[in-house]
Length: 100
Figure 1 (cartoon, rainbow, N blue to C red):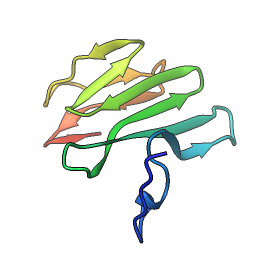
Figure 2: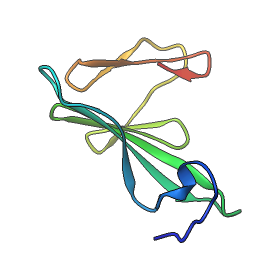
Figure 3: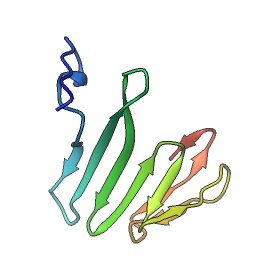
């Protein structure tokens, strides 16, 4: 446990581990979104990765605009065509400084 004792917000929880941010277990394909947090040098908490589980597929958004798929970094450049992940269930693109 991090021992964080903030008065408000998510920092009231132990963020030293991964947390479910969203999930759906209804319908044909189950999906889960996990967030991993870490502590910065100045002591502030930061979201360091978002991991998506879509059926049997896993991909992760990491700090620094890195997308990891199947243990490899997915090259994605602003303005390129969308890239399929999760067996084609998701399309990722990088446009106007936003991952979509």
